[in-house]
Image (cartoon, rainbow, N blue to C red; front, side):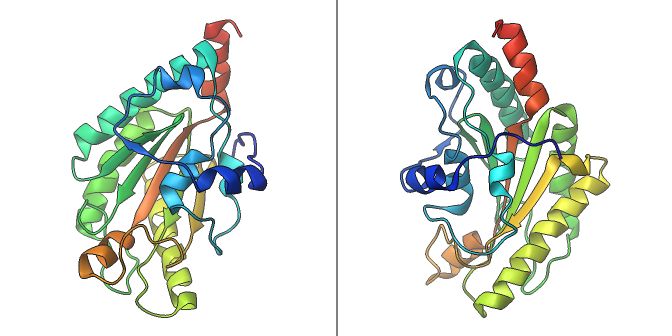
Length: 229
């Protein structure tokens, strides 16, 4: 996998408590002035706290936000990609965060799993096929897949279940021809709820898989060349 500069854990701990994703925000102008705060995209995926579990590779795919004219060029490409995902998959929650895109799939938005299952069902296949089509059009990006569960069952069981669900999505997308080198897969079990687990609706939304799409080194290098940096 092509790596992007690693964000230091201390920096992540500082910014994750304050980051706020803005749904469908236009980041063309934001990219020029925001500075190196790339950890905000992690906050949009895992909530407001850094939890346990997973494979520890989140930092390997998250870089600082590219500023200046290069950031504007990257922002434009990511805006276009986010809009295309929204058009193709209207049920998904698509957020632009810094230089990246976060797509959230839960029980109500096209990719979901039956209780205690992690196979990709027919409806989920249809949605992921559409996503794979968009990702194929934008090859200069890295893809982070993160799995979560609600709090039903033991912590250890849910950790394994979220891992299996995240890898099910990763493996399915790769089966559609996307390069394995673009992917990082992580999982957090029940430790990162973004909704109220005391309600059925909240639990259904916590049974989610997030996909983050980030510019890779090729996109960043091309943008800097075009900007004359």
